[in-house]
Image (cartoon, rainbow, N blue to C red):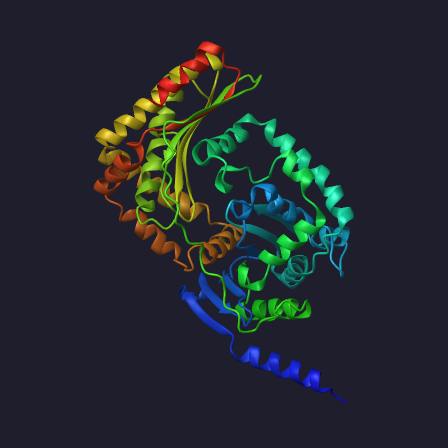
Length: 459
């Protein structure tokens, strides 16, 4: 005999299934590269890209939460939570989670950024149902026990120590602080020793419940997969966990931005007894939705994106002043960064910085040659395709696109947009970005006279 509550539950489930919406976002030839999206009642989005020619599949869940969603006292909570979701559920212990994927030769991991978090597993295509079950169980059923919080605290403090022991990595955190100051984008993703030590299980549980609702999540899968089967398996996993508490809920849209970054002329020096001085010279960049980002990508490639780039040739090839020198861009919802990194002997730091500043100023004023731009367009097109040769990269692309832009574009469309960038567009974005007064972050054992001269670089 079925109770009235059971009948109501059955009706709700039936109605929910009836309103799931499926779309084809990118239509690939013969189904290869086809991207489909289903939005389930309860607001969960599922996007897939099908490649029948491979024997692997990568399954991931993206959460619309990053370190910029933390208050000062919660700094590090997003990353802490990432660790804790691997520590066990009602159905699986931490060992069960890891051994399930290890037993089929797969790999599982996660990463936390300033505006999102991702959990994923890469397995043989035949083991995709297992990966879906394990990752969905982690995301919906984490226990976040106090004893696990206390144990994992030590591992996270060691991770912070490891980062601080790598000045080539740490200098990018310092540059973020130089540019953004004491606000969420300027704080380290890992948190600090003080904030991590102060986080409690109760605070992390509240953070988890607030940010891991299905409306905040995007499921992404790529490889030799069937979209409808993935949808059914994910739906079953979330329904088993009771995650769909509000069937009429709608997905959270892409993060909206209102910040305009104008931090210029700042200098931060962190004295360390290192063999090299590590520097980042940079300025405000572009938000990730800015249509000029395609031109900026070409500019970045020509200026510091490879062995033929200006910075590599001037700093390393012609003068041998650094082993590693490159430029990069970071785009957020409402602002961005453009930076030049170099690692060199402390005695050479001012020579390196002068060359980098001179090159930035020259490109801002005179632009790049047509040959440089043409070479950069070709390099960027090739690296874009080569970077999408595995199912993990494809999963990252479609998951991040849905979460951050709310749309999908095909690889061919990406290549077309890059190829359509004109020399005038590159020169215009060079004037806009490189023409700004830069800021500077340095880690190394600089002497007092050297440190005093750093402000001359950004004058």
